View 1 (cartoon, rainbow, N blue to C red):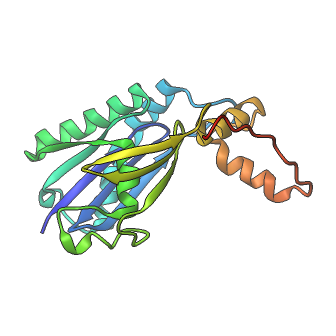
View 2: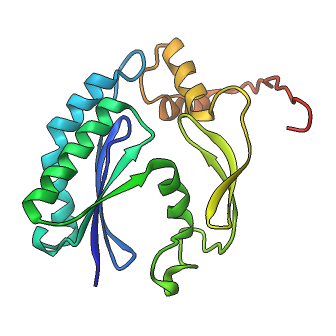
View 3: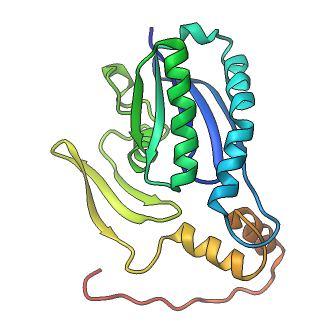
Length: 209
């Protein structure tokens, strides 16, 4: 039996997840938000610093385990906002020292992809990811990235990506200019559901992209 605790702090959310033999047994998080403007990295980092202890305790409670049962501590090492990443790393480091357990740095982007496939050291879990796909082509959309990716020859390969900015970045930029606050996605979606008029947006294609 292997129990791994994961710490997420790449941007506006501080989260703690606990996985037991490939099964998620806890997933607690708290989000930094603003009423106007975009994300302020230092303020988001302060938010993480203030909520980390409570989120950790809530995760242990949800999992129904004692912290001494944890075998390893994984944390987001990037990419992300440096002040926020530092808070997550410090929390994971302190916990690692306290429990005498190893730290495992995790690439933020790869983690998003792995969740869908559940690629792990346990062969029986290979095809039991969120989608059940064994060898998918992945559309990865995040704050900074919009990419078509697949796993080949031991590495993730990028087949194509946006020529300007990621979808998430575009949505948050629009929300900031419209004074909707951060994160923009849920707020834009709320207004979209209230809208009646559909407006087509132009797009460009360069060469064979």
